[in-house]
Image 1 (cartoon, rainbow, N blue to C red):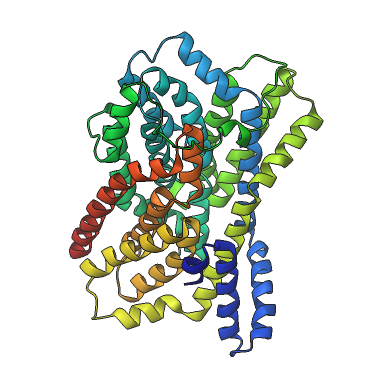
Image 2: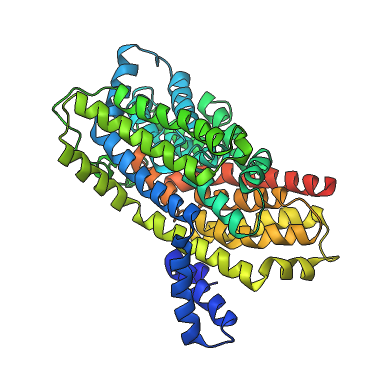
Length: 454
């Protein structure tokens, strides 16, 4: 309720931890406050949680290093020189494919897609609202479906806190049931091909074809370049400086899972694997830039620190989310929900209800990670207490969280999508919301059917 009223996810998560610890302390708020602080400290006392936080900071360092190297500009130039994009449809498909293959972090997916697609969309008279819809629709949903990133690491940690015996295997079992993510990606593919242009987006496309980039009075958000560090002029922009580090990270992740799982990917340590992968990618980027004499060691360290500082907010959400999950587990919240709903809600109602409620919360708060922290610790023990597999309920909670990240006007990814596309933010939300609601309706029905089959 505090998150809905204040839109302050940090304050709300911290208050939730405090209230939970106060209940555990017999109603004494001062003892509860002391326990809440200790609970946050204990989060970092767990090696897996500490690795996830370090991974988040390392991702920030990798993003800024790749951007400062000119890797994004190099990729754009490489595509333009080879004239791979020579039609409106190919411009849309390029942005779509980039969104699928760059799943390291949702914001870098948006920034790369926007930087590459904006000049192409303007050239072929495709609306900036369409570009914003594509990059937004291919950020959080893709990051959740291919969880070799901070998203997967967070969920694995939450599942572990909720008592899951094999959190990596449970997440992998939930991925095929992330119906909202699949629905959004399918709709984005149709939009990229120009096959399903409806609602306000149709009017935006007609306006752009007439040579008008924005509606009269529209205010595009600030250029995405201000989100990035200055690109070095010491070397020419090279696509290799972006492609090789990201490819290294993608390839290193399953190898690390195989190593830590002693030959079984499903038993590998997700937190260890993502940390190894991103550190190897960062090292690759540093070696590349040192060989090219683009930066000194001191400059690379400063870039890394700047990038890590840019993701401190995500690290703080992680710490508070994991602390809240631990407190909810100690309180027995999931077991209580299961006992309260036993015999009241059959699975075909309870499963879509999890999606709808989590979607509502995430839309109002604009945060997916905060929503995951609220719902995963509840649905895992609740499903287990009802004698059901927790995977579908985890998938429903994650899908609901992704809905808010995708559709909410106060979501950071939605705002950055408007920035990266140089589109008016209100126009972006207006054109995207019909697609999000269509995907949500399909998802609700899919979970009802899945629940009936449990």
